Image 1 (cartoon, helix red, strand yellow):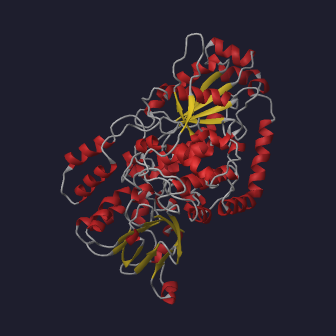
Image 2: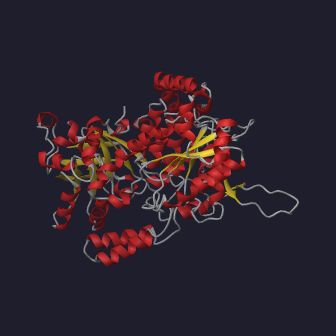
Length: 612
């Protein structure tokens, strides 16, 4: 299938824009890859330290027999449901490595925090920059420089982007990502949201709300809505960095452990089928494939920040104009909560990532001619893994087989590219005198794509919630929540605003949110212009907005405007972040340790990077 002309044009402009930085990156990858293996290159004391803790037979293999040694970087902890299953993975991997004459070591661990736990709490202000901490932790782990390959064990929001940014600093190392899968289906996302809205109105109390939340989040694995964590997994499939079809196999499934073993076999490769270095896999076409997959599935808007940073780690420069141009032509192929009622288990059952990738390849929306960790290329990711049928005792059966996906098993969840839910990806870039921002409209009712109303300006999400509780927002209103950008307070998610805003919208009021903070997929049916850049604390336009200003959010036209005469707007004084708020954002819950990150952070559109 011929590549879509817009996809091709966006790819070419990214290649041209990135030429200086990508060339420098590849030069470093080549130089690092030409060195002898670590155990042969290092001094004896270095080698002794590196392998002193290994069992004797493993030490013999890696030092005397020059066997490949695989580094494991893990985000395991048993605090978080998504990462709990990773606890036994290193033992599986090490045992499998021995079967293939190789060795494996846990090179290091990285922190993994959960936005669901810290939502609306001070700890949430560490969340975005935990990505950069994870990237640094990954680099520290791999800096021992004795690895022929690496396995990245992690799943959720900031963890996968952080692991990926860190791994790309070692672009000469073959690297495979190893997920854990989603928890089984509990209380539906729609039913959970209804209870949350009732709680926001005071119609149910804490016991009922806690019961609903516990029924939704009930076991090991990722949350089952299609937020940042599960979008991560979809994007890794589209980039060819997983064992194909691994993303949404539940932790307790019979083939889950075998898929983990397959990750080790994949990164080891063979003399005739070598796993390519990650720095070569993640090229401009690979990044475009990830962007397309995000748009086709209505994925998390957080990736408009994270994948900008990921691309920069590989010397590739992308921006929101690229996302917007792709969104105009990439069809929406899935309806998964918050863009529909289905959860990721239903998505997987209906066809999952493999169906979507196949449709995008066949429709000319993805690059097929890319490297992946599997020699068969991206077509390998259009199939689903399964255990083979038993064979006679005289024959040896493969550990896994991959089957064709076929037609959609549920067209209310996934559809072919010829009959999409929408001809566009549902992401819009908004421009105007309030700056640049983005809105995801795939879950927003059509009659809410344009909102024009007087605004209320809030300095925090708590202030908005107090106004809602005091019945001050029972009207058409655009709620502006500022001082929420990377430099101000670390750009926390503002998910706790979704229930009150949804209640107001349910009463018939025309409501929208405008913020320099994040909302991810949880904004759902409420129109939200997010990631407004430049942010208010950097003197951005939100610092000029005053209560009562009329704001017009027009998603179809791609505009976000405050309807104030131009001369008055230009002359208006820029507000400054209250000193008390600035001071409060800098202390407690470890926030003081992140001061330099806030100070040095680039804008949201530049990836909110603290390391550039």
